[in-house]
Image (cartoon, rainbow, N blue to C red):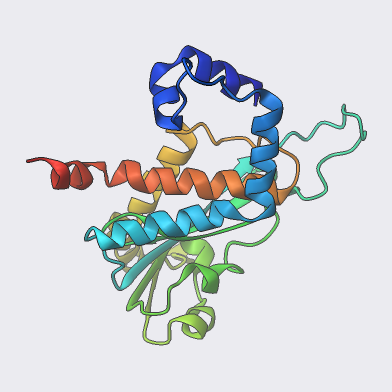
Length: 247
């Protein structure tokens, strides 16, 4: 919050975006920004903002099509207990990926397979398996659902929300110690489509810097996650949006 206050003083473009004229008013101090941020997560306005941006994009021609890519990424949280409570954040948990352990939360998203824009998201602790939020990531009109091998053999979960959808998730290729080359080739073809979900994560984590949680508790970080996804959709759609306003 203090860094945000300083940035508003330093950057004319940020003040213009926020509608602040230093000749008429002062920049809100860090305490005011803190109270405003608390209002955002208390009223779940991050989710509302994400939904509103999606609605505006649809009105500008970005339709939600019949293919959805699902995926999840880990957002790290401090695992140290050197704090006032002498404890880690109780909303965060640890999970194992490969041979390494991670502590934090997971951001699960559903991305349109054609436009590459996120249309749904769920935030959970890191120890929640990727498959559990799967129905909440589908809009129900899918004909195809793409995902990595963590979503393999989840036809029942997919059908519970999108009964007409076919399972295009990557299947496991190793059976009884042997590699199924046919299935590997099928997975490779599916991954060409599935790779679009990584573009969203790249914007959220690399451009917006959301690789680590900034606050304690899932809800506060969920507000930041939904806001970051809304901005990521605008960023990824910037080419077509700018083309629409050109004379």
